[in-house]
Length: 189
Picture (cartoon, rainbow, N blue to C red):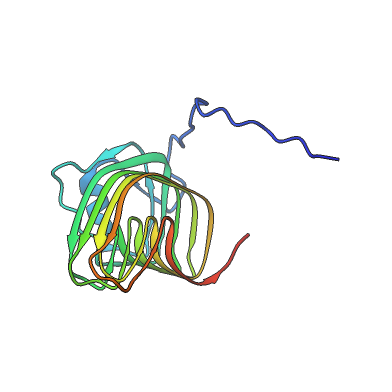
């Protein structure tokens, strides 16, 4: 007997939390995103869409071990140019959580990298849930993924990538994937 599948209406209204949970810092603008660098193990929640056009992105070489709850909001128009080893919105996520986030129109260009992804170059023992990447362009060398370059023992659930316009390696020997460039160990729920 076949189980009935619930249909999801793509036009259904997205819900957002109106107030931040206890222990979370609210982020409402580009400055708030940049201020995460002062506490990379903190808990953060987006309270509105954030447009990073003409804004400097400063977290691409960091190691994030906190929680970022996108609260079903979008961070858009991120431009990252870097020569660090780990490159993405966060360079490295170690025992961190990113959830309920939409990243729209991100461009990542690297010149001397090994691990590159729109969200993170490298994730280890982390949880990535309900994350959507749209309109992505990634250029570099090494291990490149549309979402994450290298996944080591991390859980990923309900991940979507759409509009991957370019994922291009500048050398002939590399690993490239639409979601993950290289998977060391997978923790699937």
